[in-house]
Image 1 (cartoon, rainbow, N blue to C red):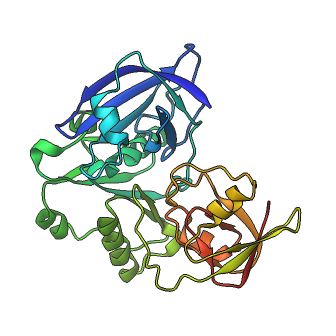
Image 2 (cartoon, helix red, strand yellow):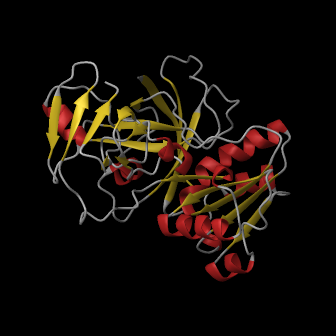
Image 3 (cartoon, one colour):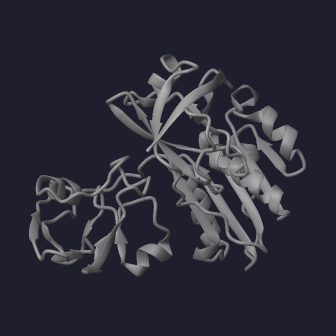
Length: 312
């Protein structure tokens, strides 16, 4: 884990604040790639995930933008109201489940709301690589555009703003599918599902679609059933009841699995699967990765088979 210090905090809009973090000892921070996020430990109560939105070439700071959530369980409200310059925080090293496709390719970046944050880091990386890209940003009006000055300063030639749904709809994104075009989407779940559904309808290949969720999309519990998990290293078998998560069962048995968000959006608890069929309920693994059936998230995913054998 890292100890970081808040070197700057300012409000971009009435709902979004920007926080800059540096190593508490003045050392270079661990490197990160575009699309990465960190876990922030906020007091003893919360661990929250925030995308890094600065250029990956920077080693002296991590920059995050935090939207005050009206449905906040405490994290965003605490950062907005209580975090001060000079305060120390514990953070994880960066992790990335939302990576850029290697060159050569054309990249279409589409964000709504606070979903701009990982795409801003991607735009910096693509500009540095010299790859062609478009950056489309749907907002809720001219006064609610987070990071606008930064976007206009660095990416005026690639940036297209949409102040309402009507103008975004008229843009007819993401456009024609081509083998060398890759789409990256981040924003509210409904927005992302609409964009991904439209893309599939236009013939975009699954491997050319990339997304990151900030909130869990939710799942129906109507088909949940009991199953077993087996630990490959010890052979121990544990029953999982319909109301239990695999993580809860393993934790109660003393089997250590790291966890952070608890909702299948951060990837901290990804666990290998030796055998069995996974009922994927995460927002981390791509469709191709889920189809491989060799990883799952014990915090939220379940089994379609009677037993899962875990690589633990």
